[in-house]
Amino acid sequence: MTTIKINNHFLRRVFFCALLSFMMIGRIFASAQNQAETAPSTDSAMAHSEKSGGREEGKFNAGEMIMEHVVDNHEWHVAEIGTFKLTIPLPIILLYDGKLISFCSSRFHNESGSYLGFKLEKEGQHKGKIIRENEHENIAGAPKVYDFSITKTVLAILISAFLLILIFLSVARSYKRNEGKAPSGMQSLLEPIIIFIRDDIAKSSIGEKRYEKFMPFLLTTFFFIFFNNLFGLIPFFPGGANVTGNIAVTMVLAVFTFIITTINGNKHYWIDIINTPGVPWWLKFPIPLMPVVEIIGIITKPFVLMVRLFANITAGHIIVLGFVSLIFIFGSINLPLGLGVSVVSVAFMLFMNILELLVALIQAYVFTLLSALYFGLATVEPEHH
Amino acid sequence: MELITPGLGLIFWMTLAFLLLVYILGKFAWKPILQMLKERETSIHEALNAANQARDEMKLLQFSNEKLLQDAKNERDALLNEARKIREKMIEDARIKAGEEAARIVEAARASIQNEKMAAMTELKNQIAESSLTLAKFILKRELADPKRQEEYVQELIKEIKFN
Image 1 (tube, rainbow over the protein chains, first blue to last red):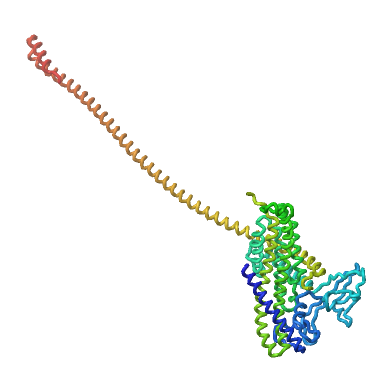
Image 2: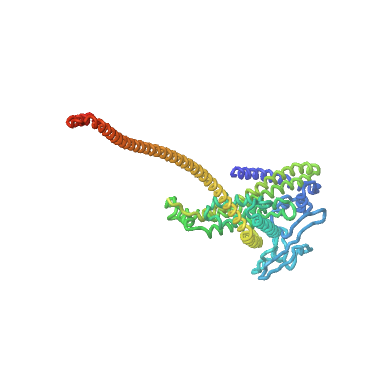
């Protein structure tokens, strides 16, 4: 397990370095040539959708394109064929000055790019955010815009939640139907995973007596992360959204782990933090060094959970998108070169996607296991010597 | 920068969706699934235990059957022995009784023979006495002219006729 993770990180780092250098070269060439003709799309459907990114000035900007695909968006680009853009507009919900304002994101597609006094910023510091039209005028005391829109990521979360409910309710039904019989169909596919989470994650980290109340959270977390990781690897519509690679999503998950740990922490857990046993007194008394370290530790644990999942999944997406970009970067220099590079790129993308399948499972496992370990630490009974 | 800045709206929707997901799945999926898994494991465990127990009981039963058979055999042997002993005793008893009876019969016969002999002797004696008397009467009739001689002679005769 550990070796796989180390290898994974190592590979990632190597790829990332390679990618960065490629991107730099690409930029230089692109600016030198200044005539960006995209290579014919001989690749997967992914390449089709990827083309939509960053070509406003007729120049292919890999960094911009990759960022556009990795971060959240107010509409869902499905495909772009020639001049025809297939985009799913999403509802915009704003809380402004105590009022809820709601409209469709396609309203922004006009000449001024604004609607009802709001606009979707395309450049600069607030890129991709919804701001007041006159935001730059800096009126003192002007109310802030709170954006509660159903964005691409929110929609992807809702779709995956709906699918998870559909799948597991049907599995629960088949448990009732097959009572006292061997599992069948979807049930037999998911049962080993459920049993694995129960026995090897929950029971072994939390303990036989107390694991039961954490099971709903652990199972939901595991399947939510795993499912969204896999869905993020599918390049077209219902998938493709970078849900588990979004810091807000991983933050919410990590905060849940933190809240559950803190609520369930017993006396022993808090005593261990405030008055850590087995530590010399001078580390605690005049300057409470150990308690401070321990309290920082409480915060670091969920923080690390958040960053690990976010970084792993986002890095995977960036690498795959990087390989796609390579085709267009080389294609913009010279068409046959682009075609040649596409063979290598697709091979690497295939390899990365297979690696990402593994990472999807590993990261879901790691998040669930660490959450269970933290719950276990918080609820462990002091040993009687 | 946007990549590592969590959006407020997304946090809100994610929290809402995830809480609902945990609630719905917890109530309608995980609870029944985990319960069924537990029940199935318990029932498998119980079935295995029951099978083990049945096997043990079977062994015990077999053992007790064998014991029963052995007991029956022993009892039969004992009964046969007893019967044999009784038979032998009966034969022995009968033999002893028969012996006793025979002895008794022989004794009785002997006694009756003795009696018969005595009776015969008495009769013989009487007969002899009678014949002797008759003989004596004839002799006397002739000889006893002289009374003295008669007397002597009678005495002599009586002396001679002495029963053994």
